[in-house]
Length: 435
Ligand SMILES: NC(=O)C1=CN([C@@H]2O[C@H](COP(=O)(O)OP(=O)(O)OC[C@H]3O[C@@H](n4cnc5c(N)ncnc54)[C@H](O)[C@@H]3O)[C@@H](O)[C@H]2O)C=CC1
Ligand SMILES: N[C@@H](CC=O)C(=O)O
Ligand code: NA
Image (cartoon, rainbow, N blue to C red; front, side, top):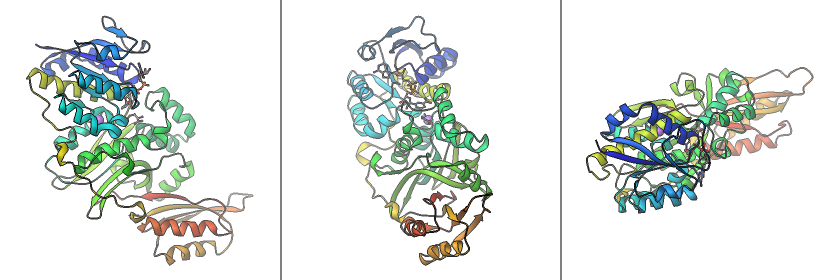
């Protein structure tokens, strides 16, 4: 059997996980690869006690790994878009195949990196970059190739799903759960990428490019994180028969493409609403197959390493057969990628959840409902809690029927201007995830 030499750059959560998965299941993996996979060189600033690197050359300068002429596949697991980009470019130019888990790098620089890889006849694979261990890139790009994709929606950030789940079920504080997500290796080096929705936006851009054959364009995504969500919102949503999930949503309609990342109320009977903790799930609506759902661990050492190793095996199979990479990185040839106009967010129509903090006075609710109805927005459900002892304010929760964002925001501005409204109105979009 041919021996294929692997160089790993970055020995953090995913790097050490990859070393461990290859060590634990090497025999089975080699049989699938049709080759002997051997990690011969690791670039790491420091050793990682979570994996055994005995017998493997370890360099403190990651570029020593790229410049190692023996390496066939370079595995980039350092994260970020500066050094990582330089590293990947240098590897490709040296004729090495590359595997990366880096969604920021692919979302922002994928177009030029894929072109460079194709020019040099090497593969650049990135299964771990979206939804961790779920083979979603392969499913969408290859398994659903017979479909036109109408829309997809997914929980694509493990850290935020872990936070919302723990806040909801265990009533834990946001900061406390975030700290645990960091300790467990789920969060990005800078966790604002997770909690502000940037990581999910990177992943959505990649999914949308494959789904619709459009260019990778991070500027085309409306992005909102989970930091405004309160325990009260989680329990009001539940009372209304919904769960709040942080979703990435990509829709293609005659009006154009709409990409958005934001907290979303989804009906409790939707399977996605039962995806908790670090699990991710992506629901894809295909023209021929209809809806299909992909679910599993979205972050963490071993699950992410599972996807990294799957990419290594794919490349090894091609190398073992002396073939060039066969599958276009985004599922279509670069010259058939087509720009599609974006639907402005102002025109996006969804039902809305509104939570108001208002004075406990007669007539407040009727004023709110007349402001909504003046803009053609009707109320689907309502919760009004009696004031807690000694307090002058009450929470008023309104679930609207579908309304254009521009209309809704106009109504919210009017409601906020009322003397009886005591703080900003909390607003969260609702999605039924049907049709
Ligand atoms: N942690 C997870 O669950 C997942 C992470 N990813 C992605 O995988 C990549 C790696 O993530 P993690 O392993 O979680 O990060 P990490 O922070 O645990 O590991 C990165 C390692 O690279 C090292 N590093 C960074 N720059 C370096 C440099 N210039 N020279 C030498 N070493 C350098 C760091 O010291 C650290 O040990 C990122 O792109 C991340 O977005 C993707 C899916 C899931
Ligand atoms: N920080 C990311 C890691 C996986 O992509 C997440 O929490 O999902
Ligand atoms: Na994946």
